[in-house]
Length: 177
Ligand code: IMP
Ligand code: MG
Image 1 (cartoon, rainbow, N blue to C red):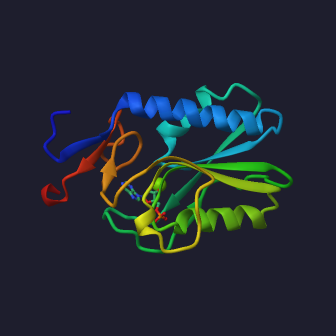
Image 2 (cartoon, rainbow, N blue to C red; image 1 turned 180 degrees about the vertical axis):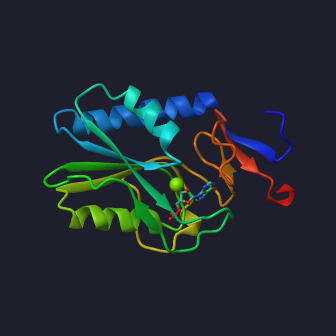
């Protein structure tokens, strides 16, 4: 990509594709006869979730939820807002699909919230994990890659709503933004 604000390609398209295939296989083995309810956390997980679901060939329901916490900076504000249609989760086996777990606030809140809506089980599947940034006690059930504490963009992840369309994961040069 011809943009000097991306200083490094951390994960190539091929690496992402291989990992998505592996995660889809793991999820399929567990959920193929469970009629799960997949919840894609917008906006960041749209590309990951789309690629993942194309490789999960069994009956499942898909819905979306929007969560915002970041504004336009690279630091979490700590509080999150959940929006979207009310989804009937009673007795369902829910799989939350998220782009990245950072402080852990988003997935912790969502997991608890879905429990209060009556979900039978709630599991989380993330593409990326920055374990060194965790502020609350939560580990994803399925994870693509553990990464260092660098601000990454692409494959759905944004900086101020840009870069989501990159087919790879790149590291943003924070001195150039
Ligand atoms: P958490 O609530 O702190 O775990 O934050 C999770 C959310 O922060 C993700 O869904 C992303 O939207 C955003 N986020 C965290 N790290 C990054 C990053 O490196 N690049 C882009 N977005 C990020
Ligand atoms: Mg997000």
